[in-house]
Length: 170
Image (cartoon, rainbow, N blue to C red):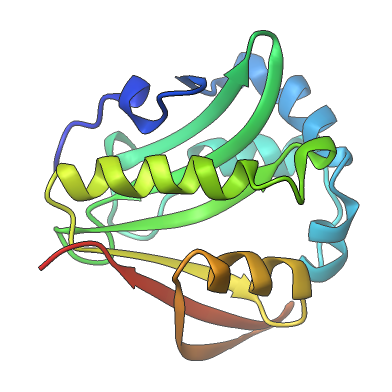
């Protein structure tokens, strides 16, 4: 496990870990992104956010989880949930990425991901993985545009998840 320096995830935005005290800010932010919740099969709730801030894959300690916000002044621009060293030591897994709905379609998300992935590559990570709701055209387009390739489909109760990955180095 590597120790990530959050400020290096972006050279444009202030990045900080989101805490329990931020649940209302996150909830208000997520409420503005109805499309995501339409496709993932869940309704947004404070309880879901409280859980998402802390949940990790089985066997992964909370120290490897980075649930962070990207801020422009007081404005929350994006939220990223990153798991360090998962599923393998030199991999990272994006559990969640959401843009401020007023900034979608303006290349802001791509610039944020470029900064995140370049920093992770500089830290020696070789692969980034994530899951995409198969039926969400906006998410599919975004991740493919950012160089992620679908490697398999996983059936879940809420629907089909596309597992995608992008090689960072090696």
